[in-house]
Amino acid sequence: MSAGDPGMAQLALLDDAGTLRGDWRVRTSERARRLAVRVLPGGLVEIVVPRGTRPRAIEQFIIRHRPWIDRKLAQYRPLDRPSADGLPDRIRFTANGECFDVQYADAPGALRLAVENRTVRLSGERARGVLMRHALQRFAMRQAHSILSPWLAELSAATGLAYERAQVRRQRTRWGSCSRNGTISLNVCLLFQPPTVVNYLLVHELAHTRHMNHSRRFWGLVERIEPRWRELDAALTRGWREVPAWVLR
Image 1 (cartoon, helix red, strand yellow):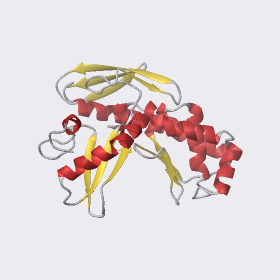
Image 2 (cartoon, one colour):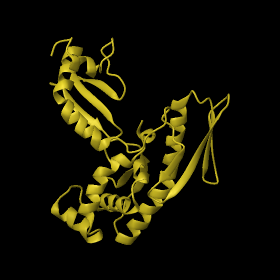
Image 3 (cartoon, helix red, strand yellow):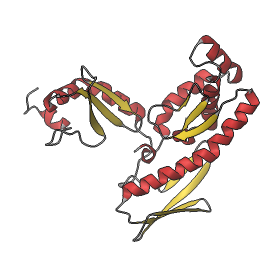
Image 4 (cartoon, one colour):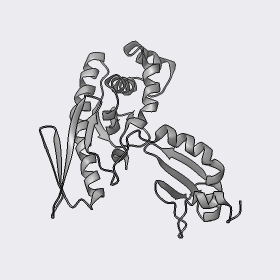
């Protein structure tokens, strides 16, 4: 495709410095032998390239893989329509049905967040939208700790599947994980999934305390606790679209 081709002009992914615009990024890898692409929940496209790759080669690679990229973006792009600055007016945690209105006050000084009567109030310079988003992410993390950790503990007691400790993280690729030392990590994004789906994920991670694999014995244990695991696992795969964009950015 020539530089004057309309398709090339329409793509226009690279700026004058050869950097991808918007939610596209290039990551140089010393170990990469060829270009690769992955699409992450939240609509981020990452192009992995060997060191020394020319911008022209990156753009040609993207053109060849654009149909696949667009299909994955459709699968992961959040269903919500964020405001121009990407900040929400309401937060709904589907996992337990809690809703919070979000109010913003443009004020000088340090950014402050307060929660009262199901209202989150953020005061600070509205132009500092990134800091406000980070404050909302920290608020979501606190909520996740207070909701998911007791939930996991109750389920552990009910099933007899013991774990060492629990932690909440903000991840783009995993809903949860269980380490060999019994630490279960849960994604804050679970707050935006239905209770049945969250419960299945907790069962899934607790089952890993017995089987650190996805063997028949592992799935047999999961099925004894949650017979609908196939349906719920499929719902979890689709669940990234339910996560608001501000959580992952």
